[in-house]
Image (cartoon, rainbow, N blue to C red; front, top):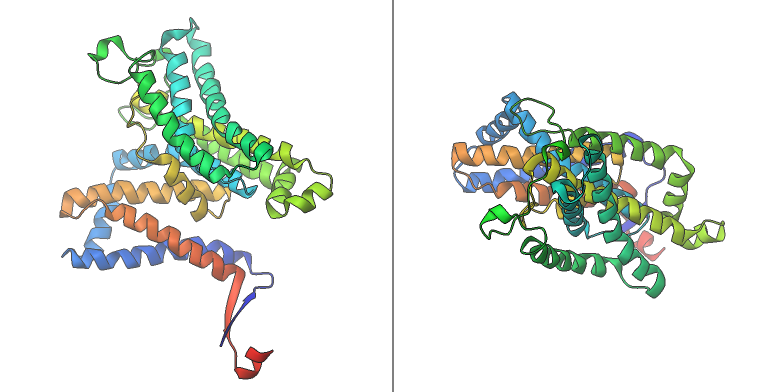
Length: 357
């Protein structure tokens, strides 16, 4: 017979080693389809490393890819800490991007010094609104936020298409559904010459550090963790659970909105319907790989960005499908979930007497 029992005080090193071990196991498992495709796994992974760390340009591309994942990973991690299941970061990202374009493309006559902060604030506010609304439905009517946030993604995308063929459309786009470009004074400054990595990365790192400090060292973080662990007990202890939910909802949505701001104002310069290849959904994987730790989100985002950028390089060099990146990411998440279970519980074999007991 098999018996599952909770672990008593698992070591911190054991808990921190689970994501690392999960990533290594996922890479090992991904070697199987590589062999089936006729590729040498060692050579393939060597090409992946070269595609990520082989040059300054490669590193900058990895950091560029990781920037929106840091924002969406933080958005998911903080909301999930409070058991508020935000599956709508993709839509909130586009809300932030739309607000950034509306403000930064010259809609308002703002001087250059104030335009970048205004673009950031408006993008964050739009993203926050995209999460506060489903949270209100949850608090007021008991609506499942998994369903409402997920469905809101599709509504926002349809609204985006309408805006890009209407008020936000660039008159010079010849009918193509894209927005007017953001003015030069509204663009996030680049971090390196002739590279795409921009100052949105710095903003993401600062916010990750602030989130880690607030979660661990502040009263707000204590209340948030209390609500996530046991909402009825937190309410009995005098914590305003609804206020905590609205607060983390606003922060989570704002972070996802900033992902849209970073992409449109820091990288692309204008808005189209394909701005995000799924950064909002991948952010959930980032948060889970990080164990819902803001500091871990940065590491997980860098890992996943490395996998995607490295897989593209490997695909070009060895003729292997770049979809291997999706396979590695999905297996990493599966391994983390299994590892997380094993970190909390241990499985023991018992005899017939133990089974009866």
